Image (tube, each protein chain N blue to C red):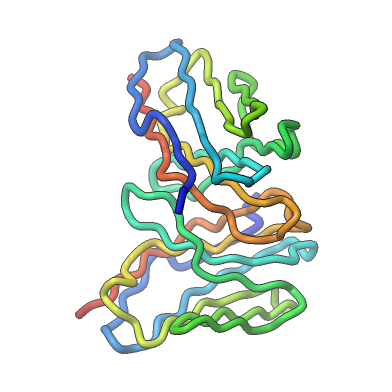
Length: 113
Length: 111
């Protein structure tokens, strides 16, 4: 069965550069969540989208933005990267109308040098 | 402020014995609770869930117990197997909105 696809799996950037992470949800899932997991930390909620509209916002820095496109894939854009942005970024998808589990991608590891 | 807490960062259990992972939460509006299992370099995978209208849900070797008055849930794995060694996260949500995760408990099952 198709799972949540994230790309790239690994990304290395310099400070003050820009990075874009992509997430392709499970087909027919209408909700996408972005989480950031720093070393030794729990996943922190960043932002979510339902039917291409932002549905909830967590601890997402102003330097970050995200959107969900008409094909339901989502992109997380991170600008003016800082060393502290180095983390594993997980995308998860779900069917909003069903209070069920999140299906996570394998994550994108961002390293800021 | 951490709304979902897992106070034990690690747990070691002998193969065949019971593993009990605990989770506490502070938000009384949470109505749906989930456990995720995570292997290194992989995304979390769903394990088992429970709605606030229940106090127990069982799926094979995995059972989740919910004590709403104590704002506490636990995951029981019995019998524990070496393949169960992973980091376990509990998560909670209110009305299907954002999911709050605990900090995780690393379970090691010793053969």
